[in-house]
Length: 68
Image (cartoon, rainbow, N blue to C red):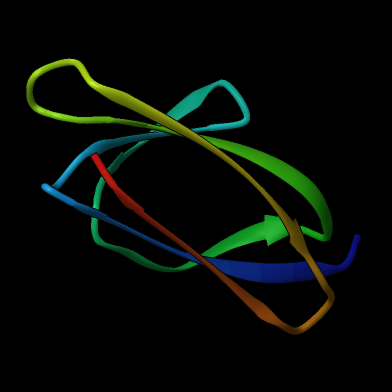
């Protein structure tokens, strides 16, 4: 399938759950994903959460930024 990339950042640093799977802590740069819609949940140090959706296009990088 076609691939795009995600840059994900948060203030303060947060744990990232991409499409229901934990993938690490922000900042995450150039993370390869399939083209199409993705859901991102950022979980901050005090348990605060931010949900974002993004659409990744082939060969492109989508950026998701949140302040928690």
